Figure 1: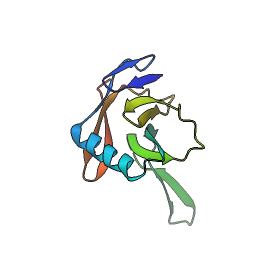
Figure 2: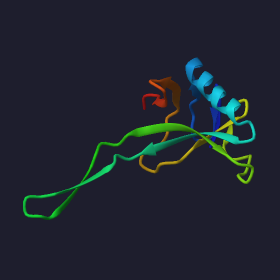
Figure 3: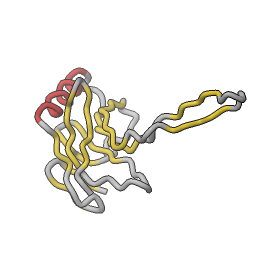
Length: 123
């Protein structure tokens, strides 16, 4: 799967766009530690599991609703392959972690309330 800012090829079929506020945040992180290899990792996250006791003392597990497509910026040291993912922004590569149940439809990376967020395109 290839993902490049503004266009995409391969099985993704849609582009990943980065808003100006997200780009500013990403660039500020990258400038803090230039010796790192920076990646925007996009992945499907399941809901967290909760465990509690029933009235009879048995253990009950429940999964919260899935968080959906999430994104984070990760900086790795020189031991990590610099060719992982594909170029997205100067000094930043994108990695989309595949999910069998939830194909990534492309989307927009935003920055809201201090966090990067993935807003997928409608499927």
